[in-house]
Image (cartoon, rainbow, N blue to C red; front, side, top):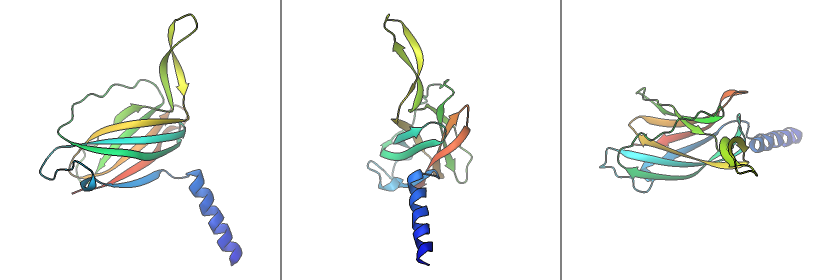
Length: 166
């Protein structure tokens, strides 16, 4: 019996350190600073810290949140690099799910100069990075799912943020 508990504890420890499943967090929008129950429009600013390697081996944690009152402007830039992060807000009753694509903070294309002064685009890898997501808070918002997209692994879910809102 003691051997069983020891093996179970060892297994749970290994699974928690290996991050075998995507992280899950719950965020209560009403408890965020600047939440105004009289305002119909809110913008949610989320800052994620990402470590690991691209392709589903990332570790994601919510590093910070902020809430603003107002409507969003469409200022997204297209991402042409094959390695990227895809964010999809999930709504319970309405199909307003609009996919947002972001440059992957761990593996991206950057302009660098060589010794001769020429600027060229090269693939740059990092061990840690941050991802800023800006999104409207609409009625029925249940979750935000983050996916890592790579040519080798395809689309892999790496994080889920659940919302508890009015």
